Length: 172
Image (cartoon, rainbow, N blue to C red; front, side, top):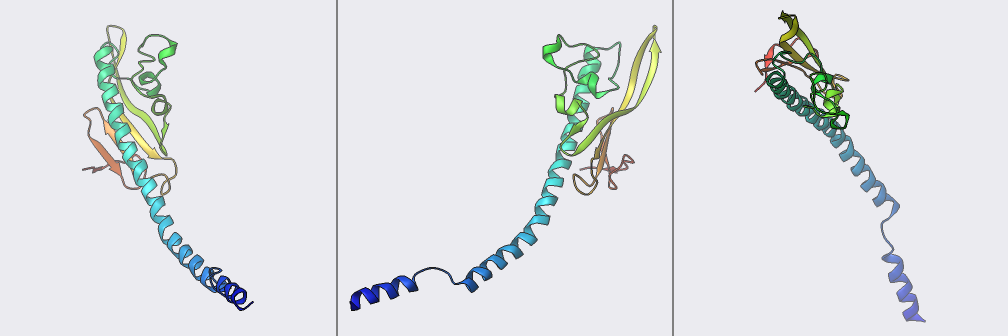
């Protein structure tokens, strides 16, 4: 009988954490989460900004290739002209199939993309775009990204620290 009583006491003592110990562990976890969550949100916005810069580079490469393949048209003045689906037929000036569909739709990774400020000239009764500017603006400034980005036909990317399209600061 004494051995049974000793066994019960030892099982009772090894039962686990007390309520106070559990509350202390949970409060420490909450404090760590409150510190970590804002940093994680900032990492997401930085990742979106990096994606926006890479997407602008992809747009520039697609524009150069478009100008090479369709010299009579010059540059494309819309993302949809650079995009297109391979199942819809062969590439054409209105659907060159040079960009992925998410980027050619104008929305990707928390940013809105557009081709603006196209300069058009007419050569032999054919409209030709001789310049363009591509922009990337956060869908929610401060949440999906902090900076706006612009790229011209030279390939230089500039940023607007306020999240708009008044790009005056060169990026590294």
